[in-house]
Length: 462
Image (tube, rainbow, N blue to C red; front, side, top):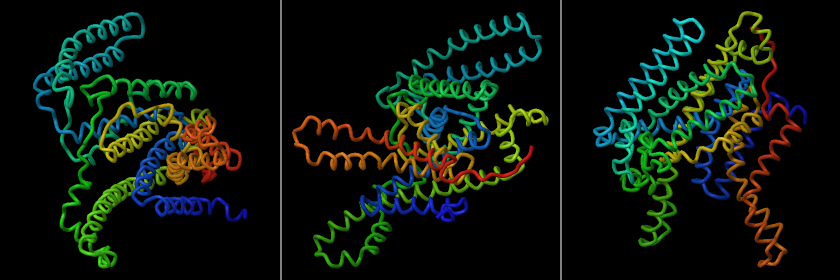
């Protein structure tokens, strides 16, 4: 038994069990539903890898995951939405001027900080610069925002994007998240781990609050829907495509041959509708799998490289690494940016599969907990563990609710149908998913404290 659950066998065994669970959902519920779970599991695994890069490699406690996820979502809107020409005509010029002034302000602030000695003179110069910049920028920014948001606010009210295939947003989402992470890292990475966690959580809330209230970016709480999801086809297009209709008819020719002409037409129509849904989900599965494998391979290669050994040495003994001349803050900044970029890619993929951007859906406390659960239960510091954690925890999160309701129906089976207690228990059943997630964490920490697929212990040096 011990040999069965050895370090070498844990990963194959864990992924085999995960595959059986997904097959059971496909056979017991439906294959489109199973594929939908698989696609979200793939995205969750990528997010988990991003957090594992930060925590598992370097011990950085980042609770701002949802902020970087939201930046990836914004990238999907900015890339795939067509530009709103009327909004650009009434407010575009002012926004461009505002952006140029912000850049000039940052450059001047850097020059003042570098060329003036520390003291009251530098503080006064920076204060005057920032106050003057605020009023100057606001002179162009405020009227431009009002003009943009007043352009048909029911359906537009924002600048739009570039009108490109949404798949490009995956790269842009990673770049945007990396850029913001660099700025945040320069400010916060000198903090102790607990303060870093609080700071990143607060910054995440700020990012999401800006996206909710600045409608000119992505319509705020009015949301953006119907995003162009090229290159993945639409179900309606497939249902009218001769090649797809012929393919479905050929696949189910045996079943259709047993039906009458009228029944055959109706059955074929239903099969085409179901087949189009499965085909689209399989397209997403293929694309997401390619991205996951690419990031996983790069992560494994980085972890096993001298850079990865250095990061783990810094994680395990920061003081010793400092004493050996390693720039710990700089290395932390690198890994913070890399992990955030991966999370940003996953955020863009999440909006791609939904076809809509909803800022209120990014709930830092709720979903950050889930992503951290994936890393901890899967195995912190182990890339395969992070991937498994992404699959397992998201599967449990989705399936916990129907399982809870079935369990509560079984418990209350002998009660009167009109009983207030029974009705209360049945209505509260979905909340058991939180209990199940907590119980899963508790059992894992009790019996597998290093995770289901733990990090391999190695001797490393800086």
